[in-house]
Length: 155
Image (cartoon, rainbow, N blue to C red; front, side, top):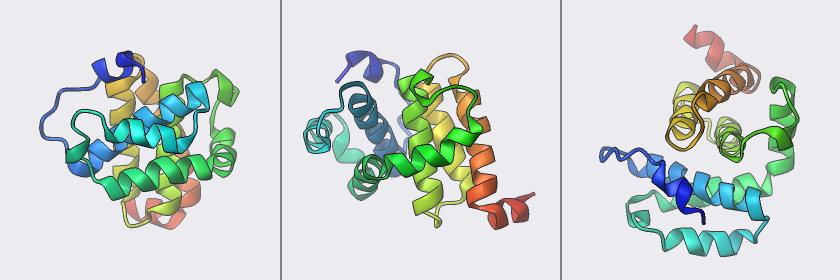
């Protein structure tokens, strides 16, 4: 695992266990995107990381393993809303978009605005200067498709 990734984390002590799960899932997906290493190996590595005991383990499992399992479908959902090839996205933006898309599809109990905000926060904490704006725009469009009724009710 890249120490660069963990150094960029925002040292906010008020992170919820679910937010921590997303941070660790992002780190695992980053590693998977960079190395295509087995998800079980990545999972074991992440579980030994400092602070993992404060994460929502069940949500981490769902995000890491569900996203990797469903990556082809999730990418197909994202592609219409991006302006470049998937392999040209930064790995952080790519991972944040995958997590956001997975939560929009598989966790309808989480309000779409929360899903988008969490993915944006991941991109802010770990990504480049304006990557969070890109993640926000893509997931906003994807939410309009995947959660049309919820989005319409919120506007």
